[in-house]
Image 1 (cartoon, rainbow, N blue to C red):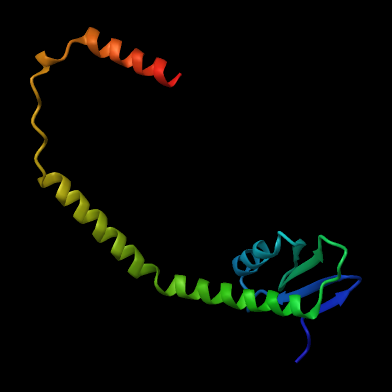
Image 2 (cartoon, rainbow, N blue to C red):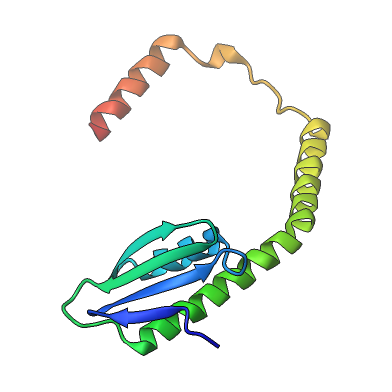
Length: 135
C-alpha cells in the first residue's frame, strides 16, 4: 500500500481521496488539530490536500500522522452513524414537538385575577425602584 502522506521539512502533507474521505470529515478532523498545528487545505478533482505544520518549532512526527488518520476514521464513523440515524432522530423530535403542542392545547389558561388590585402608579414606582437597586 502506498503512503498517502509525506513528512518533509517539519510538516506533513496528506493526499486524501475524496471518494474515501468526505470533505466534512477532513474539516472536522483538521479542526481538532488547530490548537497545536497550522492546517492548510487545498483540493483538486479527486484529492484533498492537507498540510500540517506545528505551531512550535518541533517537527510533525509519524505518531501525529497516525493520530490524524485515527481521528479521520472517528469522524467518518460519526458521519455514517449520523446519516444512518437521521430519520429516527427526526421522528423522535417530531413526536416530542407534537406531544408538546397537544399538551399546550388541552391545558387550561390560568385564571385572570382581579385587576383592581393593581394600580398603575404602584407598578411604575416598584419598577423604577427595582431599576435603582440593580443600576
